[in-house]
Length: 334
Image (tube, rainbow, N blue to C red; front, side, top):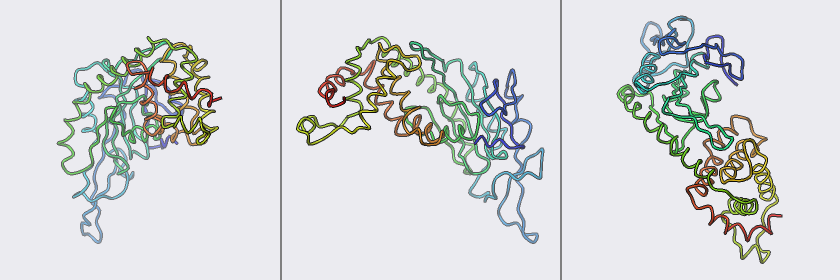
């Protein structure tokens, strides 16, 4: 669900799938929804006595309670202004475009997604790749303050959660808990910008190297066979003591079909092999699961690890060892 209530707003430079975007031609740090209101801590009393707990309200609507009561000795809210200052300081003088900003969950979560001039899009074959620098913060204790780079732009509560759950060391990410010294840790996040650009550049280099290496259909089949059976015991398989499952055979068939016919694929290079693996684990594996669960697994969970393993054995990696290991498995895959 998008969880954009009547108290929330998602502003963007184009309409999102949910149809609730307030489309703006130009979003700036001064002209955005998070500047229209601020969190205001209110002391909770019982019979005129301070309970030691506070609750957040919105400056433009004091009747709106944001999140649950909290102990201000252990939890430190981070104001919208400090959040925006953090993003602006992190970007510094770099050219950028703010693509999405706003709140969800009755302003319990706030966010901003940008594109940096140094965080370049790139094209490999007929495939386009984009990268976003995402910032998020939870006023309702449902989220730390976090920053990451990913291919997911925050436009709804699901995409906020997906970016929040991003735990990969291969991507740039940083989290700050809402403790009393949280503010002192925010300047560290500015260092992420250079790192984000570097990670995207490395990925582009790896994938372009894969697109420069041609691969035959037979070798692609062998590569998929080795990839899908990383722990296969060839001796036991040939003796009939170990069998390749029907599910693995179906995966092999599906990946080879995507290699030849998948979107943007030509069935000619190792980049087409990688794209087949990516398309399979993004769109076909676990299709019975919810969309958010599939995206999480694809981008940050087990399937993400599989995609990184695939790229490590293509392009700049050693694809031939995979092919040699897969050839003896070919008769078992049919």
